[in-house]
Picture: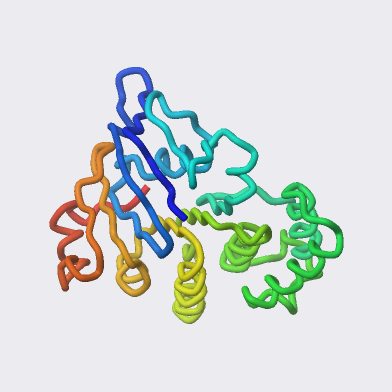
Amino acid sequence: MELVLDRVSKQYQNIIAADRITLKLGVGVTGLLGANGAGKTTLMRMICGILKPTSGSISFDGTDVSEELYRDALGYLPQNFGYYPSFTGRDFLLYIAVLKGLDKKTAKRKSTELLKSVNLEEAADKKIRTYSGGMKQRLGIAQALLNDPRIIVLDEPTAGLDPKERVRFRNMIAELGKESVVLLSTHIVSDVEHIADRILMMRDGQIIWDGTKENTPDDLEGFYLKEFGGAEDE
């Protein structure tokens, strides 16, 4: 499995948000770091087919990002995912499962499995409006995994989670990376440091660092702060 970005650019009037990015991402977890305005969210939205590149192409095993087959293979958790406050967690997952084309039996089974995996089993039949921020984030992770995606794009997946939950999801993401192409954007350097097989750093719409665990500096956070001055991520 391979996700291929070939000279991908995105320009908004006189602003270049992504500048001729060429990448090949295989099975494993790739961490994406960068300061506010670096272009990370634009890049991830193009990978998910939400934004159309100004130029260049994105494909997965030869299938273009614009094709239905590509979307069937994709799981996406945006930084602020949409939900219906009056739905229960279970109803929400069943609803998203239908949108993703799962049959009723599979939708029910997968929803139950994922609610347990993200520790929402006891809150499954409560309204989402009663959920804490961390609970909503866990529900967002669950909906991204409903269709057993082979490409998983996660934008700040551990935001709002307490330290214990964060460790739980690090482990979950690491497991997903054994069989899927996972792209993880986060401002928590330790999350990337612990689970990423490959680390990318982005600045001014360009990838300025591309390293594996073997050639990444031992003090990743120090290296990151040196490159970006400690700025918050987008």
